[in-house]
Amino acid sequence: MAEYLFDLRGVRKIYRMGEEKIVALEDINLTFEKGKIYCLLGTSGSGKSTLLNMLAGLEKPTKGSIIFMGKPLEKLNETQLALYRQRYVGFVFQSYNLLPTLTALENVTLPLTFRKVKKRERIQRAKVMLKAVGLGNRARHKPSELSGGQQQRVSIARAFINDPQVIFADEPTGNLDTRTTFEMMDLIIGIARERNQTLVIVTHDTEIAQYADQVIRIKDGAVESITERQAVLPGEADTKMTASIAEEIVENETENGGNENEN
Ligand code: ADP
Ligand code: MG
Image 1: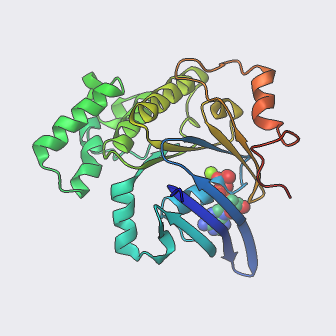
Image 2 (image 1 turned 120 degrees about the horizontal axis):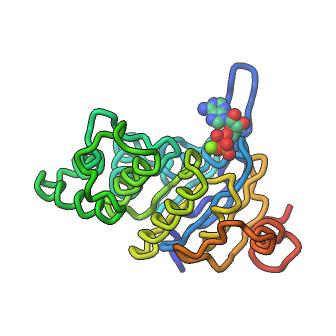
């Protein structure tokens, strides 16, 4: 039997705000495979970040199970969850989340600090990673001395330095202009493909979905459709987003295959 990287079974998330009950996710059943690029696509408030945070072990499902490489995440205690995040997971956030007092190089070495890698090796590896994201000459700069695009490059270097099993990117281009958006996507996709790493990108932007092997559309906390597609290669995205690609990503409900979640 094939072992999935993630296997989600009947995952629900309910937030309680006083009297009010908010169903953020209901009955999510999904599988994620190693080395594949996924896009969670949906409008604001549809539950994308909630789903990502549960995959990343930052939040627990109210019901259901998230099985990571054969082990249910909800059975882990806080210490084990922290280890899971350090060893297996890389993060890229919309707001970069760099530590402002540290240099670019120091920010990139951080995940290795938790793993007790020797200082010399940490610095060596961070330099290689910074070079890979095109910032070899910005290692000593603080985040405030870098543009938004450059800060996101630093955060991409930080996400990959640990050689994690999976990278979670929540609206990674949300604060960037159009040109920088495609540059950033080319970069992150290029590294993930080269290393055969799994990438889960959360976005409301259909243009971003071009890069994914599988587009999972989320609506009102449920999976609306799953589309398997031929992902574009780095540097080959349709930057004007022709109608045919948009249709392929968004309008597939009536087609065969891909759509496993018919309601
Ligand atoms: P998205 O990332 O797709 O914009 P979210 O996952 O952030 O959506 O939110 C899904 C729903 O859950 C929204 O209605 C949001 O208001 C609600 N929600 C998210 N986080 C919390 C929280 N910590 N407490 C209460 N409600 C929340
Ligand atoms: Mg969100």
